[in-house]
Amino acid sequence: MLVAFSVAPSGDGELTRQGPADSVSQAVADAVRVVAESGLPYRTDAMFTTVEGSWDECMDVVRRASEAAGRYGSRVSLVLKADIRPGHTGELDGKVARVQRLLDGS
Image (cartoon, rainbow, N blue to C red; front, side):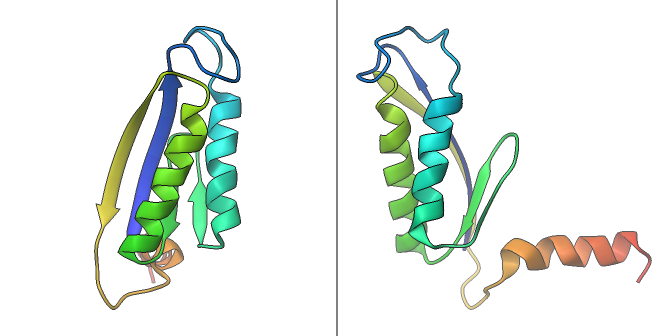
């Protein structure tokens, strides 16, 4: 499965003791670090991090990434979209490659 997610803290947090006007870059970096350390294939862009794995693997990573971001605020906003397609792997790159071939006229 593929899971695209975005986390953002708000409110006062244990690490910054600052309000929600702070940049969330450090919180996002800590969340993405959790994903990277999971060993699962992933890609991060300006809006989402997409991770590929089994249901349990992906949900565990999303939970831990949310917890990491949550250290910067009293609450966390989580946006999640999943493509649940049993029996398929390599879709993090495969989906993009299929579209690119069509764009290239192949």
